[in-house]
Image (cartoon, rainbow, N blue to C red):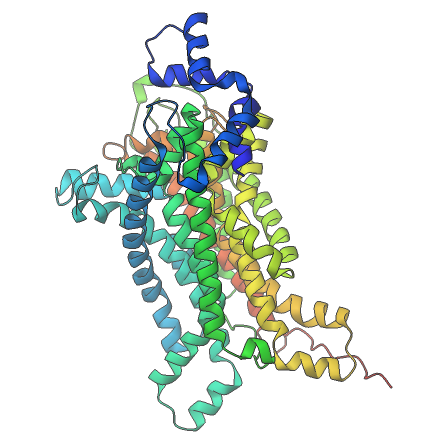
Length: 568
C-alpha cells in the first residue's frame, strides 16, 4: 500500500513538480526553470523507487521525511493529526455507544427482534450533511458551541455528534440483530426455569452476543479515526484524515505516506486488540467446540411495510424521471416547494425532484452492485479467518478518498473508478462479521454430532455453516448500502466519480450544503431518499428472514432439512 502511494504522481501521469509548485505558491508561473528547481530540490529525477527506498530507510529511526510543500518534518504533523483524530474518535465512540444502547435496550428487554428501520435510518444519515445542520443549529442559531477549530472540549461536541449518531445506528442495528438469536438459545430457557433474574439473563445474553460484534466495533473505531474526512473538513478539524486528503491533493508524498502508515498501523493494532477481546469473551468454548449455534431470529414484520416503502420510492423516482434535471432557471433559484417544483429548486434553479429521480439509477444501482460484490467477497473470505483478518484490518484503515485517488490515477476519474475504489474498502466489516460467525458455528457442538452420524464436509458447509452465516451478513450488507452510496457520491464530488452536473444524490447533498440554512429542502430531499432506501432495504431483509424463523408446522414455514443417513 505504501508503495502504491509512493507511485501516485507517476501513476497519475501528472508532473509532480508542477503539482508541488502550485501547492507551494499558486501565483508563481510554472516556467521550465521553476519546475527544474523543484525537481532538483525534491530529487525527482532519481525516480519513484529510489525516493521510496530512501523514505523506507528512515523509518527505523522515526524519520518520516520532510514535507515537499511546507519543508517541515512529517512526523510532528502526522502525530499531531493522529492525536486530534483519536480525541475526536473517543468522543464520537462515546456518542455511538449511547445511541447503540438506546436502540438495543428494547430488544434486550422484550426478547424479540424488530425490523431495525430506525437504526437503519440513523446509519444512513450523511455525516457531512448532519455536520452542516449541527453547525447551523448549534453554532450559528443557538451559539452554544464553536463553529470551527480545535482548541478545547467545546470543539468536540458537534463533530462527535455528526460522527457518532450514524455509527451508533450501525452498532445498534447489529446488536439488535444478534440479541434475539441469543435469547432463543436453550440455556436461556433453563435459566428462566431455574428462577434466574431477568437482569442477570440480560447481562449474560449481552455478553454472549458481543463476540461477533467486537470486530465490528474495531472497524467503527478505525473508521471514526481515519474516515472522518468530511466532518473534519466541515469543522476545520486538523485530523489525520484531513491531513491525508490535503497531502493527496497536493501530491505531498512524504506527508501522505506518513499519514497512510499511521492509519495502517492503527487499523492493525485495533484489529489485533478486537481479536484478543473476542477470544477472551468466548473463553474455552471456541477451542473445545462447546458453542451452540443460535437459532434464526424471529422478526414480526408483514409484507405491507416493504411494499409501501418501495411503492413510495418508485413513485417519486418515476415522477422525477418525467422532468428535466438539467434546465437552469436563475429566476427560480432556491425556490421553495410549489406546484411547478414539488420539491423546490437548487442553487441554479434546477428542479430537485427531477434531479432526484434521474440520479436514483446511478446512485442506488451502482451502490447495490458494489454491496453485492462486497457480500460475495466477505462470504468467501469468511471461511478463511486467518487470511481475512489482516487484510480486512489493512483495507479498513484506508479512507475511501485516498483509495479513490489511487484508483483514479490508474483508471482515470469516472463512475467505474469510484465504484472500484469503494468496493476495495467496503468488504472488510462484512468479512470480519462473516469470519467471526464462521468460527463460532464451526465450534458448535451440534456440528460434532452431524459429523458423528456421517455428515460430510459438503453437507455441513451447505446445510449448516453457510445458512447460519449468510443471513446475518446479508442483513449487515443491506445496512451498509446507503453508506456505500454516500461514499460513491463523495468521490464524485472530489472529481473522482461522475462529475457535475450529474444528478447523483451525494452531489445533490454537497451542492446544497451551502444553502442548508436558507433552502433546507434542497438537501432534505436526497437525505430523505437515502434514509428511505435504508428503511426499505432493512425491511426487505427482515421480511425475508422472518420466513426462516417461523415455527415448525406454520403454513409458511420452510421445510426442515434432515441429515444424511449415517455411514455403515
